[in-house]
Length: 141
Ligand SMILES: [Zn+2]
Image: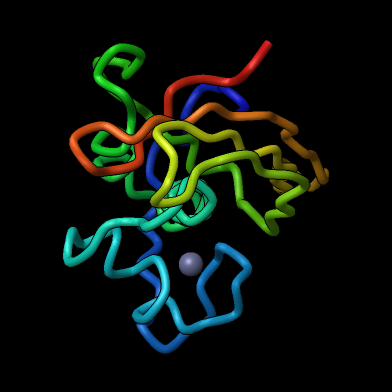
């Protein structure tokens, strides 16, 4: 995700439970990634985890991002840039990542808007199932 000096005082975006989830699946946030963010449930597949992490960027939930980051690669802290507005997520390809796998990859393009310009972030991410839960490891080279 793009790094930039964070804007000082953007209010946290807390989407209504009935609003469409930012992850792009089309379900209401409260029935889609919301329960993952609150810890009520966990993402069943690497792709759902990827989508919920994108949604966490969109709703500015750094705690969820850190919680779903492999301990081996997790940064000590995470400052989200409130000037970036995440606008769409395209999942391009996946491998593994189901209940039958221990690891998986998710290739995606995340679209954002920053300072009046559209940008995109393309990444093929690696995920692992640790202690029964999917976690983000790192981008593949
Ligand atoms: Zn969602």
